[in-house]
Length: 111
Ligand code: 5GP
Ligand code: ZN
Image 1 (cartoon, rainbow, N blue to C red):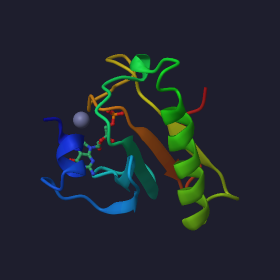
Image 2: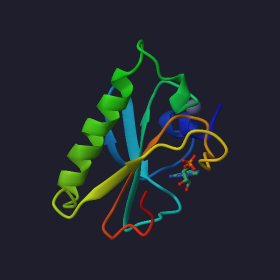
Image 3: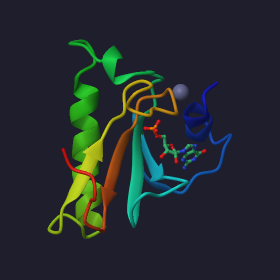
Image 4: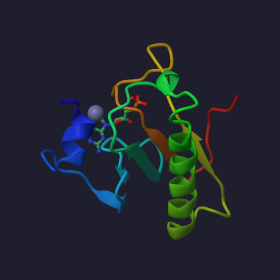
C-alpha cells in the first residue's frame, strides 16, 4: 500500500487539516513554504495522467478544497499556488495523485 493510502487508513500519522468522505488534506512533512498542504483523493490514483472524463471531477474537487483551506488559513488575499507533479521530470515522489497548496511567501519559481 502506498504511503498516502496508509495515511488515509490511519496506519501512518499526519497533521490533517481537512477530511470528508472522498478527500483528505494534511500538512506536507517537508514544507517548501510557510503553508504547504497536500490534498488527496481517498481513491488510489497514481498520476495526473490517469485523469480522464470519468474522474475529472477529482481535480475540481481538490481545487475547491484548496480554495476553502486558503481562505481558512488567511492566504486567499495574499495569493497561493496549487501544483500537481506528474512523473519523473516533474519530480513526483509519491505515486498517489496529490495537489500541493503553497502559500505564505512570495514564490521564487514562476513559469
Ligand atoms: P511530489 O514530489 O510527489 O509531488 O510530492 C510529494 C510530497 O509528499 C513531498 O512534498 C513530500 O515532502 C511529501 N511527503 C512524502 N512523504 C510524506 C509523509 O509521510 N507525510 C507527509 N505529511 N508528507 C509526505
Ligand atoms: Zn495510495
